[in-house]
Structure formats: C-alpha cells, structure tokens
Image (cartoon, rainbow, N blue to C red; front, side, top):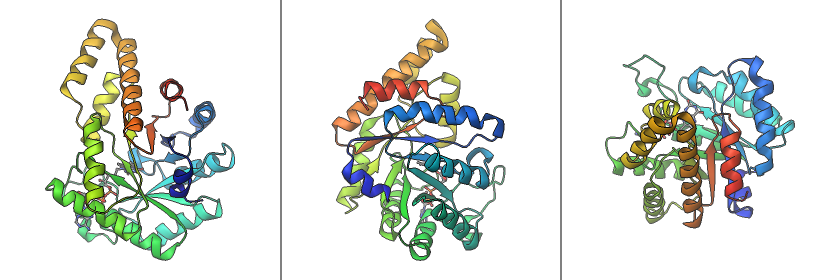
Length: 290
Ligand code: FAD
C-alpha cells in the first residue's frame, strides 16, 4: 500500500529512519533495536541507501527484512546519482517482488572527494528525473521526495529551491520528508509557501534527537541545517557542567517539545532519525503517547 494512503488514515503518526549497518555482524543488534521500537507503532520505517558508503545489497536486504520479519511498512530510500535506468529498474522490481511499494526518490550527493563532479554528465541529473522515471516505468510505486525547509545547500536562492521542490511534486512525488531542522518556524513557513504554490501533499518533518554533542556537530556539518545559537549554547553549557548525560537529557527534551509543537501545529506526523538507537526514540515516542 502506498504510504501516502496510510497517512490519510493514520494521523497523527510516528515514523522512523534507520541506516543499514555496514558490518553484517551488527545486524542482530540492529534488528533488536527495530523490535524495541515496534512498541511505538511506527506507520513506516525508512531505510537509507548508499549514504556513508552503505551498499545497495544491504539496503535491499534490510528493507525486505523490515517488511517480512519485523512487519513494519518500509520506505526504501533510492538515490539515482551514477545509476543507469536498468540499475533503478532492477532495484524497484526487487522491492516489488518483496512486497515493498514505496521509495524515497533522491538524487544523492557527489562521490566523496570529487569536487569537480558535474551532475549534468549523468543520466539522472536531479531527484525529479528519478521521480519521472519510476512513475513512468513502475506505476503503482509510492513516491516520496526530500524537502529542505532551510533550502538545499547547493541552491542559489530559496526561490529557486521552491521552484524545484514543486517540480518534484508535479512530476509525481506524493509526499515530502524534510531534512532535519531545529526551529519549527522554518517548517511551518515551508508548508505555507508550498501551499501558496498549490503543493498540498503531506510534508513530514524529520526530527533528529540530539544524543551527543559530537554526533550532533558531525551530522549538522554534513546536512547544513542550522542549530539555533541559544540551543547550541545550552548544549555546550550542559556538556561543560553535566557531561554527556546532561547533553542527552537536553537533546531528548528538546526533540520531544519540538515534535509536540509540530503535531499541535498541524504536521501530519513526525519522522524520527533514530541513528539506529532505541532509547532516545522510545522516550520521545512514549512522551508523545504513540
Ligand atoms: P534534488 O531534488 O535533485 O535537489 C538537489 C539540488 O538541485 C537542489 O539545490 C535543487 O534545488 C536543485 N534542483 C532540483 N531539480 C532541479 C532541476 N530540474 N534543475 C536545476 N536544479 C534542480 N542521501 C543518500 O545518499 N542516501 C540516502 O538514503 C539519503 N536520504 C535522505 C533522506 C532525506 C529525508 C533527505 C532530506 C536527504 C537524504 N539524502 C540521502 C541526502 C540527499 O541525497 C542530498 O541532500 C542530495 O544532495 C539531494 O538529493 P535530492 O533528491 O533532494 O536532490
């Protein structure tokens, strides 16, 4: 079933993002985390693709097991950078064979270290090309796309980014999952502006629970999301005074309040970036009464 149809019947909802562990020895621990998080009744779980050097095979197998063993509806991320139409079709067909109907259609980032990489040399140049291809060649596939409330790092302007965001929906994107952010005003402004442009698909906010100062700084350096100065100072102060435990407490309390405010303000659900850890998401999900 398409996730966009599940969303219509299940608001508000909680969903989760996982990444496939590279080392197969850690898969039993990974699935233990997934099992623990099932208590929150996630509407779906997304599984990243290729990010951080993960392989296509690992993504596919984790997605299949998410569906068949864990019984959670998967949303399989799929990037098109460097791919041929045949690669894409093979992956989407393998998903279909496993009963997986939904993808998050992404362009992906340039290969690490290749500063001169030019997307214009690629068969698939943008996320929207993947959306168009899958819609035409694999009808019936549920297609989600990525959204950037603070604009994509490469965008010359916010206006330009909105134009291409709308284009991904016009091409067939059925729901948007956002990049993480910490200031809810950027999410509500993003939704309002899209709605003014006639884009009315569900916009699911991605929330990163900050579990440690080090990992937060690393993730933020990769994705370009801004952390409000006041919150960063509070985290640094907590670290200086109470160490990692104090940072964790502050991070989880912040994410819980952030998610509640988003739901109260009309977000259809919240998508938690789990970082493959159970404890923080369990605390947040239970506080939100999922
Ligand atoms: P696009 O939609 O192609 O946008 C990229 C840039 O091009 C933007 O600046 C946009 O404005 C511009 N643009 C778009 N269309 C056009 C056009 N037709 N003409 C000119 N300019 C255009 N990466 C992974 O490798 N694996 C993952 O699993 C993964 N999961 C993600 C999940 C989420 C929720 C998010 C938000 C990101 C994820 N990423 C992942 C990162 C993502 O691959 C990068 O952010 C990538 O740089 C952009 O992908 P996109 O599909 O959003 O790109």
